[in-house]
Length: 199
Image (cartoon, rainbow, N blue to C red; front, side, top):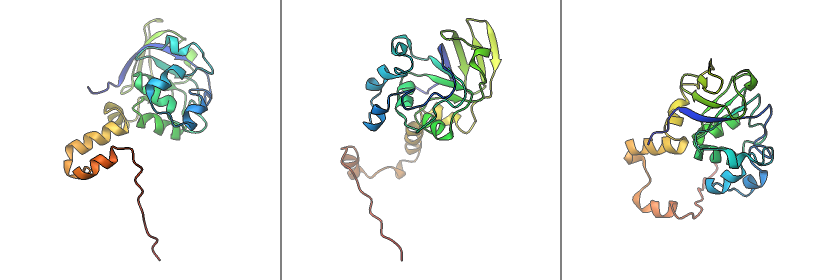
């Protein structure tokens, strides 16, 4: 199934400067290199909103102010949000965090201004990331936000960077790994690439 560029659910509203570490997700999950969304989802935003995991539902949206995802660009929070089919609307996001979110298939709109201007925590909303149209069903209002950059939309539509690569390899099978290397690559055995210096 192709992921949609439209998300509909409840709004979870946060302020400015929400960091990825100790904000979106506890740093211990990044340092532990945890990537299993089943393990990560219960810990989304738990340090700043302990009840988040009990309220969040598939398709919900995070609406935040400026500098969302600041700090080190660890992706554990994005993995969890993408697995829930969520989306993010924020005032701004550091480019490294944006790159991590998009690579995991999490749609992001920046330039959303002040959340209080159009949405409150718990409102039922729908956001079209391709057009920037955001509808608040609770308040019965429609706002126009800057749409997601067209170059990013196909990445989200294919489920992130891995999905995009899988699609490309499906269209270009000759570029895939050789059959005898598949067992090594899928085994989890580290593969070291050696290179020699040129004088």
